[in-house]
Amino acid sequence: MLEFSGAPTYYIYTHNGRFHRDEIMACALAVLYLESINPNYKIKIMRTRQNLPLISWFYSQKFLQHRAMMIDVGRHYDPENWLFDHHQESFQECRKNGHPYAAVGLVWKEFGKKIISNLYPKSTKKQIELIFSRIDSEIIEPADQGDYGKKNINRTINSMGPLLRELQPIDGHESGDQEFYQLMKLFISFFKKIIARQFTIESEVFSIIDEEIIVLNETFDWKKVVNEHWEKFLHINLMVYSVGNQWLIESLPVRRKDNNNEARLGIPKKWRNKTKEELQKKTGLNDIIYCKHNIAATLTKESAIKFATNWIECESAKLCFPEV
Image (cartoon, rainbow, N blue to C red; front, top):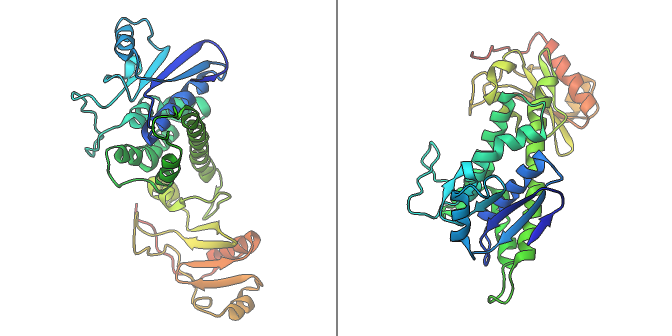
């Protein structure tokens, strides 16, 4: 049994024996939800299959309502009473794409938006919806699919597989409780970091938009953000961002989700496909690396911003207006 200090006391029940990503991640989210309400709550994690029918009866009588959860055990799904199992024959909860929920998906479905809003009370409803949906599609749904034996698993989640196998109880002589708790704590930190990073994306991207150029201070999938918020980027032509030890200057596409990536602003011919030495001479930037089609690279942020400004001001740069 693992206890998280504080009062009052909340109980989270899950099964003992061999553990899986599903209930570990689900329990981590349950703890994170309770902690996001009040970090002083006392939380007890109970790994057992004993007396589960009795516990279910207690729930039905409202004796433990909203003071305990049952996750991946109990053969009941009743989110109002914090019952999150998916093994019963009557279970039919699926996403719109037809993919069934497992325990982690059920817990995220119930508490995900509340966790985000509790951790970031200044977040807007739209930000919460976007962060919830993105984490669900990129992390939670692949984990659900994995519990049903599907191979559609996120790389980060899938990388935990070998670690889980190595930490399993040996021949029934070990409970595996301590390993379960350690992994659960790891996933609590993981979810906090994922939510924080997504919130950073949603909050910082829009605060640094300035005229036709955006400079990103965080590394993330900005193209996905542009696609999801296309209307907010119609007046933006260039994105400045870092990859490894380089700073890239890239034109945004003309069309949404354009695999061919037709550029809104083409590289001027006087810079295109030149050698590094020729570029340095023509641009006056000693650390420029290359320049082709719709993208250029420098070694410093300062040079990247200067190049982007010169690119915007260059009359020979072909401008294509984005589709609305």
